Image 1 (cartoon, helix red, strand yellow):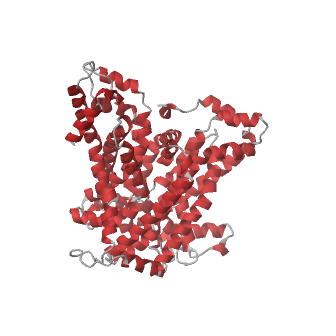
Image 2 (image 1 turned 90 degrees about the vertical axis):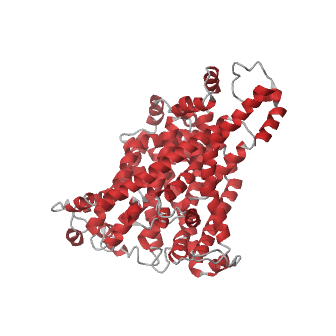
Image 3 (image 1 turned 135 degrees about the horizontal axis):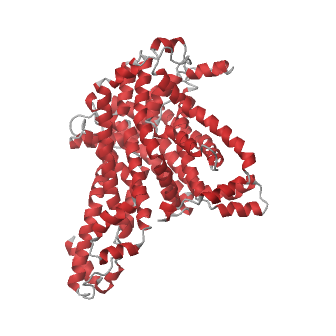
Length: 291
Length: 335
């Protein structure tokens, strides 16, 4: 519980820092400007150059669009391939996230609020999964998916991604669920609810901040995954957005402007989800660090 | 399963209260039947709750390690049954291939550079940003943004920015640094550092956000007490803040090392490990030799070697660095 609500009162923090701020503030702002430049300028460049023609780009790599060429963006937004890549990414990330959060929260519930033989062994087994990143497992996974007949199949990507998201999901959710007072559970049981019902109707809603955090992690991990889809998919109509970006780069290698426009558009969904969800991520991270 | 449970129930009869479940209306009746049905019910609940996750985890995380280890002992090209057992031959070939040894060196160099350069940078920036100033939440958003970008997007973006005559070259020329301009991705002596710079651009924000979260967990009273005792801001940072940030830093080190050992996307999409293997990592080597050349059993041997690197590091690190931290701190692995 503390993890959910433990933001220090704003007043106290303001007071603490005002004392030394006059020496450090300029440094903070200077640093902010440098970081802003290094982060935003490359991104801005990609978006702006997507609105130039390749001829403009080869004439000067630093100029602003003159005139603005919207046809690059138009060409991509009207191509079926872009929307297909986007849809595939969304479907796979959606399935992977739903499985990771759904099954992960159930497992975390069992591992946090039941006592049984072998509980810590199972927990440790899950946590060991953190040592074995998906990228390293990709080639053995490819062979396994071949055995299972899941090659060139969206589930062949979504299922492993969900499985590899389970360790971090359980690791984050377990302390969260543990911290919820036992009295609540007792009260629910006295009222005649089963433990599964307590889990679904009381505990899960209380864990919402942590669920959003692990959901986002699973989603972003799946959305950005490159190597596994690269191995699994051979049909272009199954490609995810990152695969699409690389295919597009090699197909249109002479048309820099179109590649930039495609890259810019491919960045939009990730950035949009992130801007919406940023507060959850920071809250989740700080909650988890506090344990 | 059922038999084991019944036996358990018989043994734990009177002690069934160790289960945290509250006594239901029938609890007065502490007879065998009630306990047994409750035990059965608990077993059923546990299998519903844990079963699916365990199946998924064992099926797609543990099984590939086993399958990979098995395939790596054969000579197999992707067709037909495994018949040609060769033992550790694939591993011997790997370590006698200069290209793979070089890929290991590159991976370790990238890991070392990440720790030595990204670490201090992330700590410094996090300390500077850990105060109330106008635009703080906006800065956090900006800093974290590259981390959520698909690495494929980052790679394509930077390979265009770094191409000869691209934005990076132009900016350096206009800043009077034209003499330093390189063929960033084509010079064998430079390419690995270019790749490292792009990796830093992508992943630095993650470290900063993690450390900022850790900094928020440090009670203000401690710093106030130090200040009252006459400590300068520098002393407070050095003697109070940094030691308390230790668990977060150790988690960051762990995540960074495991992440660096498997780096693939950015390198592959910018240089394909080239020119002449000058930017090969273990993962790009694995993809090229194992998948593109259809030497699947050789590729899985490389995967197992990579796994052993991760495993060895984790064991050593767990033993010497993480041991002091509580389980709560381990959850900092969140991101």
